[in-house]
Length: 284
Image (cartoon, rainbow, N blue to C red; front, side, top):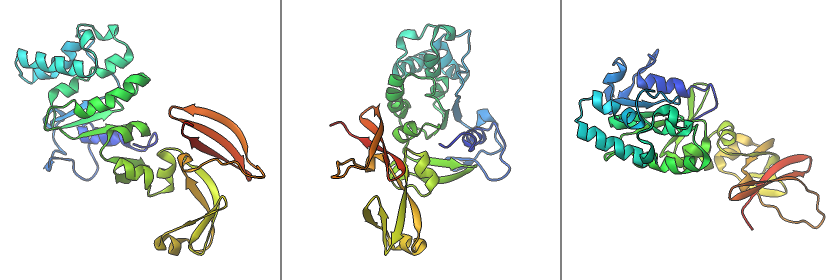
């Protein structure tokens, strides 16, 4: 994942064989497929665009790959039914694309029926409504028969990536800044860019002094490595909204400027000491 223009789609196109890399190799299961044609790589691609055959029903679209692959009528019918049921479209299998909503069209992912060695998904959830966006990622993890092929999902949606992935790569300017577990990317970002891109942060003035950072009247110890690098200097601390708490003080001094309900938390915008910050509070 990464911001627009960082290179996510280019990587997906290179892996899928739609672009030729200037250098390096593409390997699938240790096998070099850099110069192979798209159809000879064993890689299935689910594009952001719906790319459905308008003259085929949902069932026929899903079964198409199995049909050209030589599967028997019984096998492709059974597999197509399983996939449509998995994504909640069993009752719509005989409808044509123009009879389906945009979200339903995107769920007719016929590439999944090919049982590829590797599956590339280019923002496959972007047109879905909120409820389905919560349910479908878990189904994506289970949708393939065992053993599951590896999947690369390209997205700009941080929550989607952290919820679906086993490993998350954060890109900037064509390079992967960090490749780690979702927990490490979220809680132990390696750069300020990742801290701000993955989730929300507050930029708060701080001072490094004597192996500690003083911020908002509190002193926080830092590691020896950080201490040597920072020395004694004025800094900006990047603090997640959920790591701050609001507490009434004797003399006040803070001004609440806005409150926004965000699902299980309430975001409170606070002005304090000439700085604005966001605090995410759990339900009372």
